[in-house]
Length: 227
Image 1 (tube, rainbow, N blue to C red):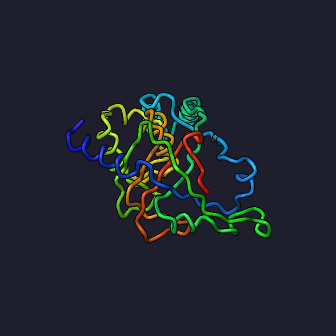
Image 2 (cartoon, rainbow, N blue to C red):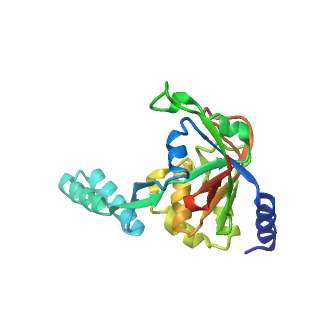
Image 3 (cartoon, rainbow, N blue to C red):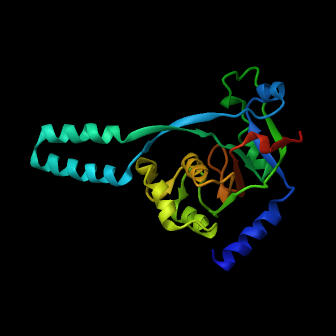
C-alpha cells in the first residue's frame, strides 16, 4: 500500500470516529417497534466463471455471424448455466449531512402515505472494522466511477487482479465505466469490507447538488440509534 494511501486512510478514520450519522426514512414506525435496524438481504445474479463466460460470448458472436442458429442456441444455454445467484446483505445508508438525510424522510415514499411517520434518525456507528473509502467528489451516488473505486481498493492494499476478479462477476452491472451503489456494496462485501464511505458524493432522494459523505453499513449490529 502506498504511504499516502495509509495516511489518507488514517485521516479518514480520525475524522469519522465517534461522529453522529443521519438516516432518513419515510416511515419510522417499524423501526420504533423493533428498537433497532433489522438485517435485510437480497439476491443477485453473478457470473460463476468469467473467463469461460467471455469465451462463450465470443463463440456466440461467431455463430451468429455464421448464421449457425443451432450452435448459437447451444452456446446461449451454456452462458445461462454460468449465471448463478448469491445472497448479500443490503447496505443501510447513512450520511454525514442531516439535510441530505431529510430528503429521504419523504412520506410519499411510504406505502402508507396517510399514516407514515417520516423521520431523520441519528446514530453512532461502530467503525472498528475494515472500511473502504471511495473519493467520489462531485459524482452522483447512483453511478460511481469504477476507476475511483479501483483506486480506493488499491489504497486498501488489494491488487488490481483481485478487484478485477470480482468486477468480472457482474459484467451487466457496469455501464459507462460506472456502477450502482448496490453493486459497490456487493463487491465490497466480497472483498471483506464491513463499511464503505463514499466521500463528497452528490446524493439526495431527487438527485442532489450538495456534496456529502455517504456511509454504507452491512451489519446492523454496528449501529447504535441515538434518537
